[in-house]
Image 1 (cartoon, rainbow, N blue to C red):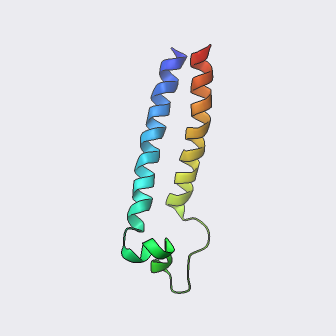
Image 2 (cartoon, one colour):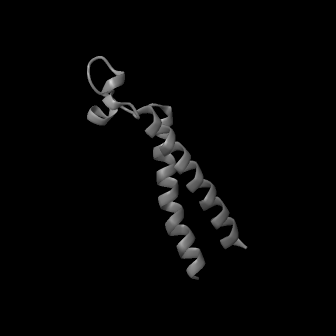
Amino acid sequence: MLGVVLIVVHTIIAVGLIWMVLQEMSKFAELGGAFGSGAAYTMFGRKKGLDTSGKITVALAIAFFVMCFLTSWVLSR
């Protein structure tokens, strides 16, 4: 039962991570993004730090990493 719950949560996190990464990529889809990965949107070069969607993406990536180990550990027992 716990394994099924972990797989469902893992799948939800994976889909959320894919969605957020695609949203982040669409910000830099213009030609200027290819050369500066964000310098096209700022006047004085690349912006510093992460915006809210960047922080959500990082949090989902960390959650995905932890869930990979947790799910594999629970299912191997």
